[in-house]
Length: 344
Image: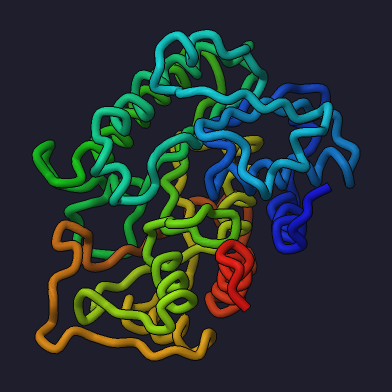
């Protein structure tokens, strides 16, 4: 039983319209199980096990140990946690095979993947190929969590799956961009010879289930609002982003994993907002001021100005969907971080 009501609710929403017959009597191996995406995959699988009585075994791979919000799941016979470093060859090679594998282990925060470029490359390339070898048979399924960063360099939005970015290997974010592109290439090699392997180009998922000190924009704004009682921006916030609440993103990816016919799908939301307006909305909900630099300031100059995905490929196959609204999602993450930081 999950102790967090919002994670339990999100787990249910992640499971909507999922093809449970594809999981019955099968084993799922999930990497990055303690991250934002991994947490919600676990919540969804836990809901399928406990509420819908799906007989699926889950092997959850974590690096830094089981976070408090997932400890209650570690007592379940149907969920096995294994702790270790996927970037260590012996560890990843010793992992058990599985019918279904979701590779969600990576550094999703720009500050983190730029701090650890070698590990970032290894997690998305070498580890991807090793995990693909562990899919039990041609009826098995594999999902690689790629990123909208592969579109870096494009200026005309929305980005569709037939496009590819134009940045070069010496770009400041190249360790992540090129690793995701290469990871997709690895997936396509195995897709053509051994299993149903698919890539999901995920864009800007947010929501509860993060740890302290998460450096992604929304988490950073909420942390500042709660702890500093103000939100200070580094620039004027003109960059525009389209955010996707995490339960929407994981539901889309679960359906892609179990039924998707294409080799790659965009996974993103519809809540487009400038960074400035995002800060104002967080500030309004928490009740704090937003402070802009007097002379424009200097933010992340290598980040794209606009991020927005075309999800027509997904909707053509799975149908239109209702998305969690930005304000609702922000309220969920604010309540989560209030508990995380013990703030009233």
